[in-house]
Image 1: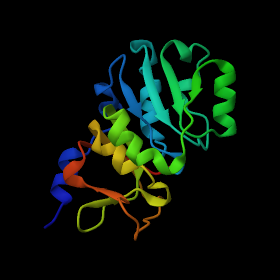
Image 2: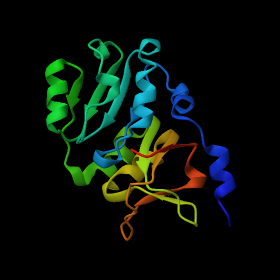
Image 3: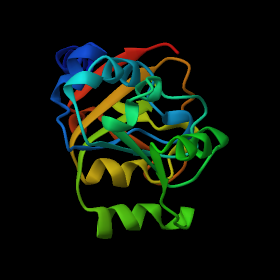
Image 4: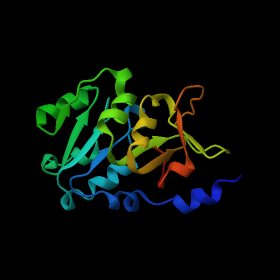
Length: 184
């Protein structure tokens, strides 16, 4: 089967995709190298429209656009499973929390304890001929995040490596609600 038509139907701009995020939502932002970029920048443009949006992820590799403003904490709060130096600085600013957990427990924790995420936004490798997007080198718990999410938005990055051979290492286009393209 050719999944290119379904891909085209689900393809939207980052600005369009983040319109569905509402005040009070829990939004998973990916993980380490899977942290979204174009979607983060688009959500930052909506800062004045939103309050109490709880973002979750871990091991940030660069500062997030949503926290660039001095008043970001009035709109967004970062919840991290594992801390990088960037996140420790965010805690000092009062815009982030550390949620300690053993890394290997994250998939079960999402399925048995979190059980609901409003929006999952995850950076992925380009879709293959069979309709699969790879989570790349940071698969870990991302399939579990998708399993408990109301809406799944993938940010396709042509530079994300496809990593195969793991368990729950990707997501099929049939499970994705929106696709955003990025080349960061």
